[in-house]
Structures are given as C-alpha cells and as structure tokens.
Length: 134
Image 1 (cartoon, rainbow, N blue to C red):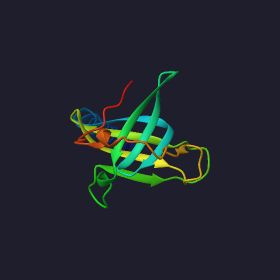
Image 2: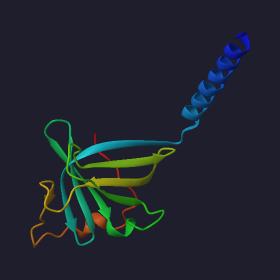
Image 3: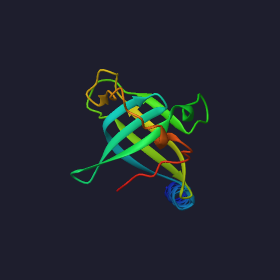
C-alpha cells in the first residue's frame, strides 16, 4: 500500500512540475474583445470593439492575412447560441503573431454595411500588426 501511495505522490509531483515549467516558458499570450460591429471592406475586415464603457476602437485586418495554413488571420464561423462574436489577438514574446475572429452569419446584427463613398484604404496600407486599445 505504501508503494502505491509513494508512486502516486511522485507522479503528482512530476505533473505539477511539468505544468509549472510549461507556464513559465509559455511564449504566447492573447487578448480577446467582443465584436460590436464588423464591416467587410474591399481590402479587409474592419472590426469595431468596445474600450471601457463608452469608447469604441477599430482594428483593420487585411484579406491577404487569411490564408489556408499559417496565415496571420483566421475567420471562424460560429453557430447560433449564446456565444457572442469576438476577436482574439495572439502575441508571441510580446510581438503580434496572429488574430482570430469568431463571427456569425452575414445576417447577424454585428455585421454592418459600409457607406458606398467610404475610403479607408490608408488604414490597410503597410499593416503589419494589430495594436488593441485598452
């Protein structure tokens, strides 16, 4: 019986130390925000998210970031239910890595329509990262 208890304690210590080492060496972290409105612009997506209680901020995600494998952006379509559309920005060692947007179908209330005379091309020029406002 003592051997079983000793083996269990040793196994538990190994698992705890492995988890602790993983947590300390983790080079990724992320920030998630709820999407208040998203627009499909001809150069990419414009994501509007809330900062604090009253301020809205914008993130620009170029369409060319969305590739099949290893792209800088990923769009995940979510089904109806309790989950609200969101955007998660991932960082590796403090530098932008990639972004994921979780959106509903085009008829959902978070999708907006850009006015026809909108010219936001400058916001997509030479875009290398997403910097979220807090």
